[in-house]
Length: 181
View 1 (spheres, rainbow, N blue to C red):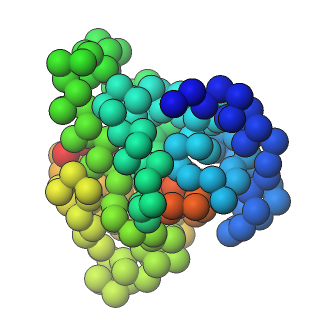
View 2: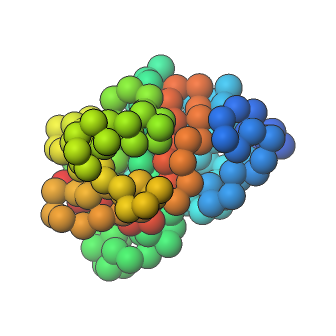
């Protein structure tokens, strides 16, 4: 599906709900419109061009445009820049589609989880909350002060830098690192 003109139209809208109501969701890279789905909003973000390219290469556009609900932990382009360029380019090759899909679906949790819900689950879990990703692997959430972090299966952590970017089919939390299953 070509999102060119449609993405430009979406960019004219402002985020209409949640803590960023009426604001350009700083850190997301574009105004979000919560009546649009994750893909319709993501294609307009200047800070997530690598993520959008990876989602397309992995064949996940239709899935993430579906009804959900999904909680997406969305690495920025700066997060992807921390991955060695050769490794990232290799993942984008058609023969590595299954591996790329596994990594990307590791960033997706079934259901719509706000940071308030995640924070409560962390408190209820005495400092940790373990969520199962769509990929099947576990993600461990924890807090440092008021900041929410998520740790991957390799022991690497990412900070939620922009929280609760509501979409018609879920919510996006922007993170500062790529998570690995």
